[in-house]
Image: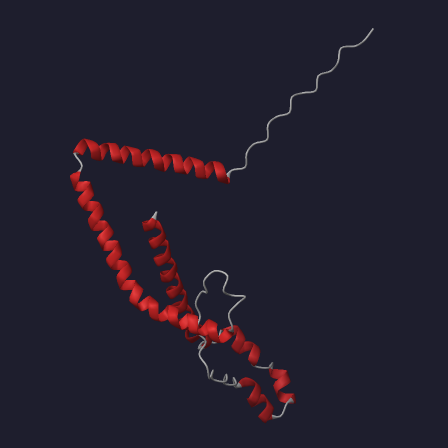
Length: 172
């Protein structure tokens, strides 16, 4: 149970760090390119351009530079129930703490996974070939039972057929 909690906690932190990295890289990827349709829409039609003064036509065809962001906004994921409580300043500090912690946690997660794998290999080595076969069979059975349970939960139960109404015998 403790192992599952530790793995879930470490997975959450890893996911948060991936989201933060993706969010940091996304504006530089998306913001730097204009699509062909956007460029066409920015240019006026040929007939319209003749009616406008040349200075105005040049302004419309030249893309205006976007103002540079003065403050970089960090993104991450707040712990459960924090979103309605913390201020924007606290939110940014939490994201920064998560980012710093992620750099420390990632190598530790890899080390933990390595230690768990090493432990499991040592335990597996203690078993006889017959015991290994039994364990594999038990694992396979558990996997089938889990899949069957999952399938039963996802499929709606069929409603029971109502018995046909009995017609009362005719009275004389």
